[in-house]
Image 1 (cartoon, rainbow, N blue to C red):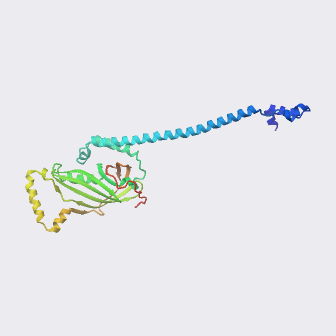
Image 2 (cartoon, helix red, strand yellow):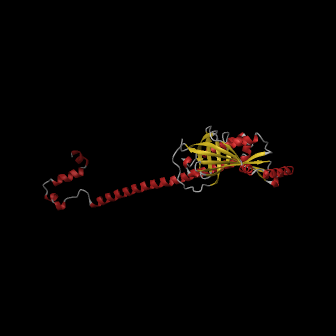
Image 3 (cartoon, rainbow, N blue to C red):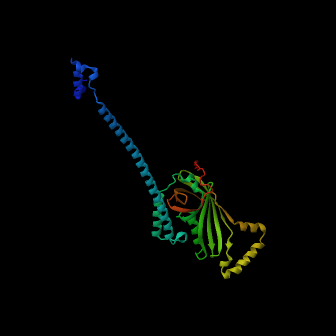
Amino acid sequence: MASIQGSFPAISAIRSRRNSSSPFLSSPATATPLVSPARSTETHRKRYVCQSIGRRSFFRAMVQQAVQGAPAAYAKEMERLSAKESLLLAFKDSGGFEALVTGKTTDIQRIDVNERITGLERLNPTPRPTTSPFLEGRWNFEWFGSGSPGLFAAKFIFERFPSTLANLSKMDVVIKDGNAKITVNLKLLNSIESKLNLSTKLYVEGPLRMKEEYIEGILESPTVIEETLPEQLRGAFGQAVNTMQQLPAPIRDAVANGLTIPLSGTFQRLFMISYLDDEILIIRDAAGVPEVLTRLVAPPSSLAEPITEYES
């Protein structure tokens, strides 16, 4: 108490005056108040102002944080869209699919494409792509490496036939319900078209990793474009058509349905999905070689529930 009184001499003085014998000073009606009404009102006003300022500062900080978060997300999204456009332009500059399968893509073009692939992968918006509904749909191969089925088919063709006789014009894949169907479009003599269909089974092994097991391959019967068939081959083509018509029905139907090649247990591979959105799919095989696909047809329902179970 002594320390408090020493800190407030005015209060001690008032208390000593009350204890004196003066009747005037000891009268309750004329006692001097500890704090004047005007000073008390001013103190409460200052306290209210300080509290109001504190509340406004708190809410201002919250608003600033929310406003700053929106531009950051917008900037990241714009960076991702720019990276996608840059990658698609790099494909075009490198000569596209035809240059890739014929081996005409230069080392500079390859490293440029790979650099842009890496730049887009770090902006992947899908954290669990193997169970995302975006994975299903029809995809077109834009870029692939040494371990992909596309390069395997291209090598098979170009090692046996010159590019003037046979070429690989297009390759796409349909992913649906854990299965994939890869279609390789072939063209012979620039007049005969055929397709090689590869059926595979996909197994989810983690949020990024999948296993692909090849089931069978079907080489469809060729379709001849008579208008573009060379004149010297038209006679031979007519004879072949007549021969086909004279074959027994079971053989003719078997030829018409194509040649089936069993592949179960012969080839499988592991890969990871490093990028996935509604337009682009990037996967890397066990050696880290990238494949880039662009969407052709969206899945029937992009709002389907993702699969959450993993198979090993």
